Every structure is written in C-alpha cells, then in structure tokens.
Length: 226
Ligand SMILES: [Zn+2]
Image (tube, rainbow, N blue to C red; front, top):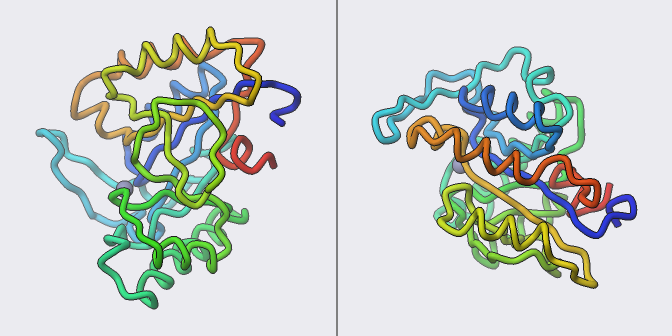
C-alpha cells in the first residue's frame, strides 16, 4: 500500500472556483496532492454567490487541464443539486452526465466523487455504485486515520477549519500504528478567502509536507491504490 509507506496524506476540495488557483499554488509549492470535485454544468457559467461578503466565482472552462495538472478531478454533480431530493433517475443523470463531461474535458476516467451538501442515503449510494464510481466522500469528520471499509461513504479526517486540525496533524505525524494511517482533509478554497485564513491552510500544509515516511497522493491514489 502507498508504495511501501504506512502513512498517507490527501486533500479534497469542492466546486471548481477561482480560489482554487491560490489553493493549487500552495499545494504545488509543498508537493502535496489533492482531488478537486467539479460540477461540469457550472464551470464557465456566471453562477456566483456571496460567502461572508466574498463573491465566489466559478472557474472558466479553458486551461483547466493545465491548472489542475498533477491532481485528480472527480465528480460533484452536474449542477450541484441536492442528492437526496432527486428522483433515482434525476440523480443518475446528475452524476452520470457530470462524469461523462468531466471525462471528455480532462481526457481521464473519473473514479470518485464528493456528495454535494454532504447528502446521501441508501438509494443515492446505490446509484453512485451503478454509475461506476468507486469512492464517494461525505462531510462527516472522523478525527481519525484508520482505513474504512465502505469507500462509497468515505468520511474525511476533518475540515480545514476544524478547531482540532493542528492537534490531529500532530497526532497523525507522531503515531506509530500497525495499520495504514490516512490523513484526509477537505474543504472549499473560497472559504479561505471568505474567512481570510489562508495562513491557516499554509500552516496545515507546512506541517504535513516534506515527511520521508508519508505518501502524498490524490484521493484515487490513496483510497484505490492506483
Ligand atoms: Zn459543493
């Protein structure tokens, strides 16, 4: 697992917005890898919204391959609809069409996704499986690093704003467990603009980066081992 390493770190960021540019600059500078969950039907659209006084804007469609190079692209729903509020057919279309368009746009097979609004139920999960996606992230923090059996409701370690994030990083870096340990962080890059706490993200990255006993990979690499 993980090229012989017992520990791995990965990041998961949603929605495909302008703030991803700065987030990618930081990840790349620290040689960290992540997965970006995108809504193909909203990229390049004038769709924008206010988050605590910060105007969030979607990324344009051009040059996305170059921008996200070295990272993984994953499904997040064509139009960012609420998964549990859709019929089975509408949900299948929402992720099936997103998968198809992202695969055409990036020339790569989509292996996973993140649930919009963190919403899922049994039917939602069943359709994810039928669509051929092999992992799907929720928004429920585990505050842990242990392997999880069900990758279709994969729970992250924590969000970047979690009050315990630094404590968890220290615990992760110093632990000597027998089983593989994964530190999985998630969030939205625009929150860092809205909260004006990019220094927090920078500190998270500087603490996690550069360890010779840690594998740094995308979600696909750390969850599926490919
Ligand atoms: Zn989202």
